[in-house]
Length: 86
Image (cartoon, rainbow, N blue to C red):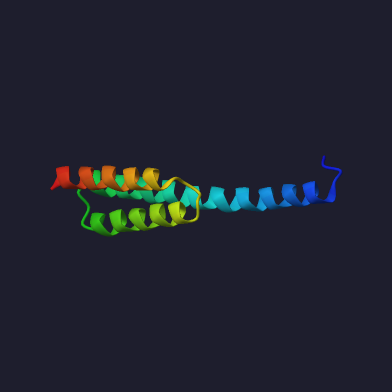
C-alpha cells in the first residue's frame, strides 16, 4: 500500500477512473451486441440501434476510454454489415 499522501490520492483517483471507464466500455459492448443482433436479424429498429452504438462509441472516444480510431472502426464495421443486409 502507498505510504505517501499523494500516492494514496493517486490510488483513489485510479480506482474511480477505472470504474468510470469500465462502465463506458460496457455501454459500448452492450450497444454493439444489440446493434449486431438487430442488423443480422433484419430488425426494423436496426437503424436506431446502429445510431445508439455510434453515439456510445463516440462518447467513449471523446472521454478517452477508447481510441478515436477504434470508435471509427466500430462504426464502420456495423455500417458495412447493415449495408450488406439491405
